[in-house]
Amino acid sequence: MHKAALLQIKGECVNKSHQLIFARYRSQLDPDKQHLLLARVSSVMAKNLLALSFPGGQVLAVVGGALQHAAASPLDLPAVGDMVLAQWEADDKAVVVEVLPRRSILQRRSVGRQTVPQLIAANIDTVFVVTSFAGDFNLRRLERYVLAVLASHIQCVILVNKCDLVDDPVDMLSDFSAVLGRVPIHPTSAVSREGLDGIECHVNPGDTICFIGSSGVGKSSLLNALAGEELMETAPLRRELTKGRHTTTMRQMLYLPSGLTVIDTPGMREFAPWITDESCVDMAFEDIALAATRCRYDDCSHTVEPDCAVVQGVEDGEIYEERVEAYRELIEEIRELNQQRTLRGIAKQDHERRGRTRQHKKKKGYSSR
Ligand SMILES: Nc1nc2c(ncn2[C@@H]2O[C@H](COP(=O)(O)OP(=O)(O)OP(=O)(O)O)[C@@H](O)[C@H]2O)c(=O)[nH]1
Ligand SMILES: [Zn+2]
Image (tube, rainbow, N blue to C red; front, side):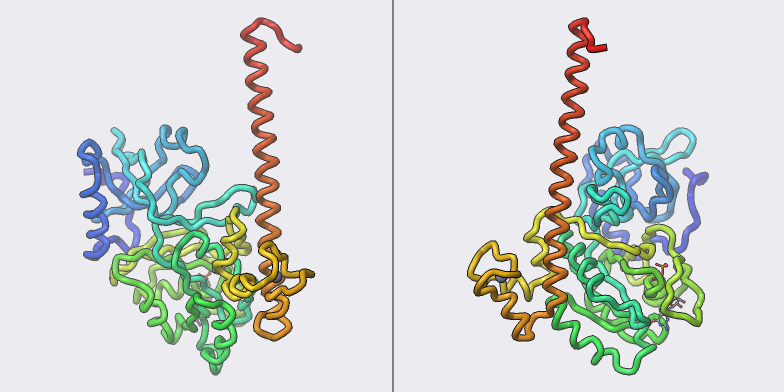
């Protein structure tokens, strides 16, 4: 028994739905891998340090050298929500040797290095984009979150939390539900528990859900309200509710008694979708995409062209002008990203070619130096 590294973390996977998932994965494993520890990454604590959970325990683990070496990009390394195989080393250390195939990945454009994607979490069924009635609501920011989720082919639901602070939340949201199209939008309150059924109606036991949104909107509070106990630390109630303060510092996965698995993420100031295909933008702008099918030109930029149905839609008050601007901005960002990636690709190829030439010259016995 590998007791040394076992962690005591709240929210162990004791529910039948969680255990069934492990049983299903185990039944699909090759016989020569049956001796390995099948676990799920519950948090990434440092670059190569993970917390893994499995029926009956949690353990700290490191990412194996071979797995690190074989990773062509950061996307190939274990992320929160990943199902992995680990082996026990002699000193009771668990070493992750394989990431099992993923059902889905939620990614965004990396903040520091804009031309690479960053993996937020894996194997998610539904992402709840959380905003609040406490001055945080920003349609432009929401569109970006929603687009990132839809482009990852994950079901998206918007929660506008802290509805206990306003008089008529449903009425306040009616305008936006038309704008955000097919993405459901629900008012919730982690304090009064109003609207929590808006979360429950989109999930099944055994599902993995994820909360994303700015700091202070109440992601951890909603998680606690769903769990019925304090699993996550939240910011203390302050007088200026509009100012969020970071409480959650890393992505963390928790098992709820209901059978749900929830990933809480720290508030993100920026959420640029990772999209390289312009047509993906239509997923979060169905109203514009639909109108665009009636434009005279297929490659209409919806600015100066004659018979542009999008411009007409704005004039008729059917489409919000700001939304068309946001749509154009996103398309522009994708074009820039692709240009930068092409340039980087060319630079990388040049670098590799120079390296090969240098090696070739060395072999032949002559050098430019
Ligand atoms: N009035 C009201 N306050 C809430 C509600 N939900 C959360 N809060 C308060 O809002 C503050 C922030 O809540 P958190 O749950 O820590 O927010 P978070 O989104 O997890 O924040 P980060 O961890 O920084 O990303 C706390 O003071 C909560 O008590 C709500 O439904 N109504
Ligand atoms: Zn047009």
